[in-house]
Image 1 (cartoon, rainbow, N blue to C red):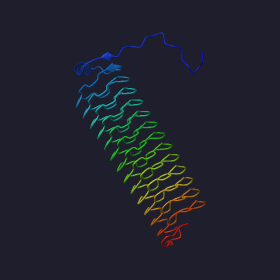
Image 2: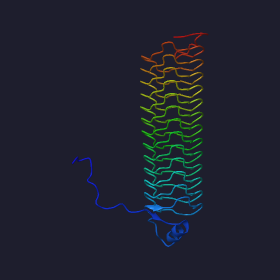
Image 3: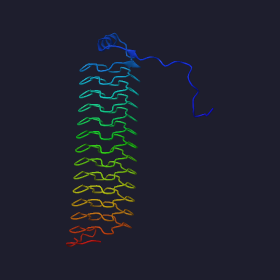
Image 4: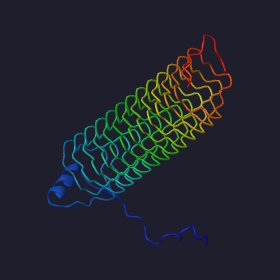
Length: 302
């Protein structure tokens, strides 16, 4: 028998305990906190205080926790599809490996929550607070995080295909090796954000603040960085083929060994930018202020 394949268990799996919302609240009020493996579908637990409750591996589909207080609650590996966590307080909650697809988490507070490997496909996290939250390896494809606060959050190796992060605050967040093709980051605050090794093909960073961000060794093919602030950012060893950098601020930006072939740098400011061994073939530099302060003339192309 393969060492990687565990022997079949001789113990039958426990049947999920089906309870009502009333029974859950009564038991919680009596001091019980362990509700692991329960089944409570479509219940209304809005505005309730269930802090510290253990719902590990429970089935809570379509249940409403709107406005509930769930500090330190354990939802690890729970089934939470279509759940309503709008305006709920989930500080320090455990949502590792939880299935929250299509979940409603707008304006929820998930600060310092554990959400590693969680499934948040199509989830609505508009204006949610996720400061220092661990979302490493989480799946956020087509999710909405418009206006969300993710400062110092970890999304390393996460998947954020076509995710809407416009106007979000990801200051000093960690997105190392994240897959973010077609992600929307218009007007996002990305100061000091780490994107090292990320794939961002076709992403939209229009007017985003990427000052001092780490974008080295990233795939930025066909990205929109028009009017973006890249002051002091590191884009060395990255591919920006066909990128739109019209009107971008590239003051002291590091672009050494990067590929900007076919990019549009019209009216960009590149004073003191580092361009050692940078590929600028067929790059449009009409009106671009070059590293030495010289402004390129009309129809200029390198």
